[in-house]
Amino acid sequence: MNTWLLHRGAKPCLFLALCVPLAYLVWAALADQLGANPAEALIRSTGDWTLRLLCLTLLMTPLRVTTGWSGLARFRRMVGVSTFCYGLLHLTAYSWLDMGLDVVDIGADIVKRPFILVGFAAMLLLTALASTSFNRAIKTLGAKRWQALHRSVYVIAVFAILHFFWMRAGKNNFAEVAVYAAILSALLGWRVRSFWMKRASSPR
Image (cartoon, rainbow, N blue to C red; front, side):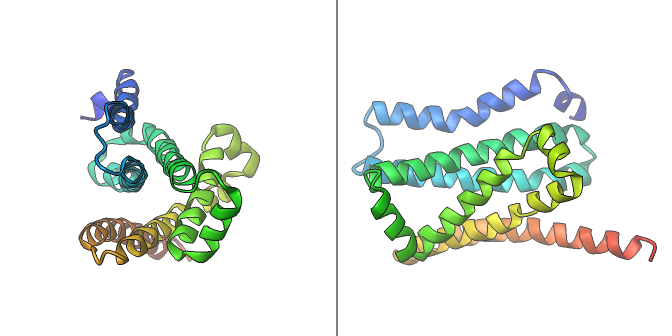
């Protein structure tokens, strides 16, 4: 498996796979296959894929450590940037299709509705991570500050779950929220456990 992950064709294959959801949404929109409320379908679908890719991004390190597949490290940046891209599409769909790109109304909506506020905060943090996801940013910020900034991905995960929870609260539908919360809690728990194990084993 690790040999395949290190193959030069693995990254293009992953890129194409990450583009499949977007390609389907574009096709569905052009073919009028998004249902009775296309705007809501686009907003919800791009949000769902942002959350899925966020889970996949956070899974990369635990999977690499537990399996020994070092080649997974090559893909974390691409998946992380794709998470940002789908999040940006989600924000754009909301701003354009739901709010008509009215900046005043969007600002008022962010202040008025908590689930919009935490979603917007998560997007700001994602933007910070995406804009510093390149090697030059590591040199500019320094490794320690860069790592500290990129640990905010777990804050983003918490905000994303709150955004999803409050959005579904109006319909009293929490089944999917519980699944994503369980996945992200397990991934965060793994990270906390690894941190304390390293701290306990390090020389005082």
